[in-house]
Length: 61
Image (cartoon, rainbow, N blue to C red; front, side, top):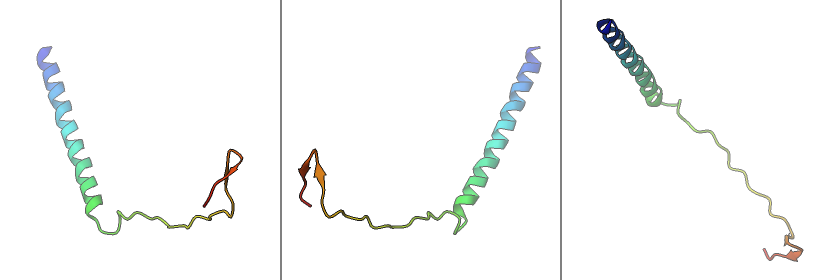
């Protein structure tokens, strides 16, 4: 019984290592491929109001 459990745990460890290796290689390949890791953003100017007040008091701009 203990021998079967040991073999089963060893098999699970090998499968986990293989899956981890495949996932790691895929991630490294995705990061090293040029053009696939760009961040897309747009710079937008904020509109500044003519007047501003806080708690009923005017705030200088």
